[in-house]
Image (cartoon, rainbow, N blue to C red; front, side, top):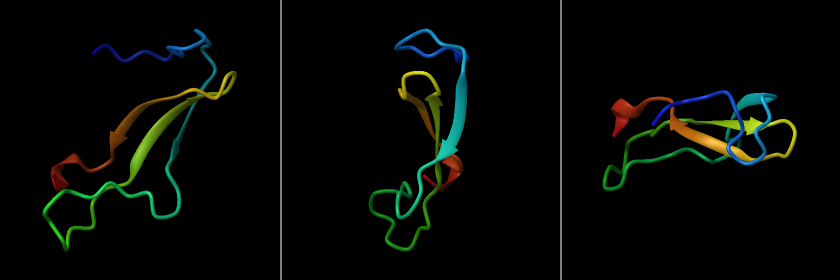
Length: 61
């Protein structure tokens, strides 16, 4: 998959980046004591479309 800085929904180039907040941590299945990883997400500042969700620490899985 080719990563671009263009909204896949509306085509805007006005893109921001953020984290899920609160308890929205991605946790591995079957690892009860793992802290998991924060999830980063890119958001279109024009239409609000969320895309390109990624685990900040994929090695936890």
